[in-house]
Image (cartoon, rainbow, N blue to C red; front, side, top):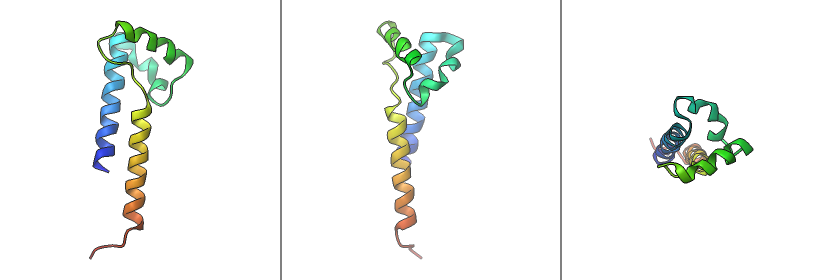
Amino acid sequence: MILSIIGFVGATAWWISFFYDILGQDFQIARDCFYWTTDACALKGMAALFADVPEYDPMLLWVSVGLFGCGLLARIISPSRH
């Protein structure tokens, strides 16, 4: 579960740094791009050729969410250790 939290924080930092580099102070208009790649996000992705940060991909976010869910499920299912 710790790894999934690190992945989520990493995805958030990646999203902020990429879109801040592209859009400046208006980077929050790309908040839909945090969860999925829309057509507008794909257009901004083309600007990645001119950015210092690699193009953001929401796959890291979804892998982190999946890992967190698996870890949570494993903790619920496993027998308690008292």
